[in-house]
Length: 429
Image (cartoon, rainbow, N blue to C red; front, top):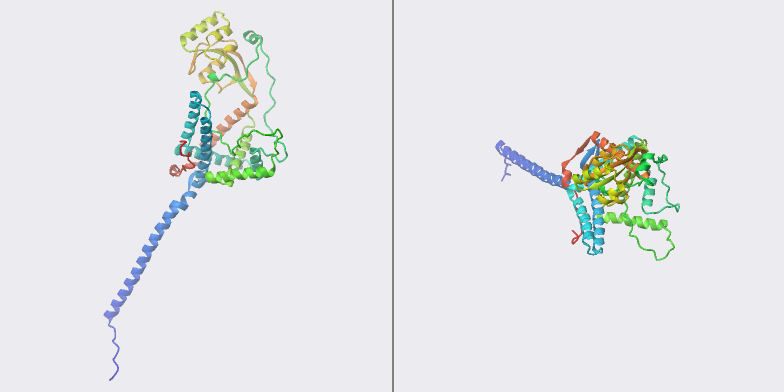
């Protein structure tokens, strides 16, 4: 029997096979595309939630980015300091007794810290601080101002009270030599016989300062009474242990690294150097007024006081009898010498507009009604504290100018990325 002849495929059959092959290929490609798309979505989601946000900028300052991770680290650092401060105050309050005024004072402090821990408030403050720090670094670089790692080391050592040479590093000061103090004129001696002017104005009418939390970089150890009068030498080994303890504590409690801690020190040193450069021409003298006042509750009483003084009654006697300013009434209401920006504005304006010996009409402030007499008016040398205050005020104006002129872009998503840890321990909040 002859072998069977192979069946020859027809064109129709070949076409069907080709269609099936193409369909399978298209199915495989489609499945691959869908698979890759799913993988892409998953990878994109992971990137968006875990990897991209930390390196995304929350702000850009003159082209320099402030990354989310750095912003969050700075917020955690500040939260940690505030939480520790809250705990210390709370513990002190528990041992302070039941005096109502003392307890009220402590509770006010605790409430203030709580408000500062509000995520939006704290986040905004830290973001603005980091913008200012960035501007400081940029401006320092333009001026060729640098801080070495050795300077950072020395600053940290001094924070701990460790001085390798055995003595505190002498800090040079740019504070100039004071001008001689003026002598009293005949009129001033008549107004204030046998008087030595006081230096610090009474607190009763000073302008209310802005409460700005002081940031402590390296927490000070708790003071422990010494058992022996012999001082313990602070050795290099002891300093290294203390420093390492602080570094590890910040890392554990706030996830704030040693590098970030040193960065804060470096920025602070740059700020001080830049401030010295910017304020090197600050004048060492200031227009000041020496004044005294009598404070009463209402205008009618003030008018009566003015009439008594104009009739020739002794200022000291009237002040001691009627003045509501218990801090100054016994020395005739004397406020000493003060410059602008110290007293509340209405009081300051009136005092600076008086001639020596002249008595004002009643002046109303939030404290009451004042009768003011000018005892002196001249340019006087600033003391060290006043000079530093003047430098700080001038530098603040400089920073505000930099901020206004800078190209700053802030991204609103920072509000969603403000850390809420470290938090107050349960039972304290």
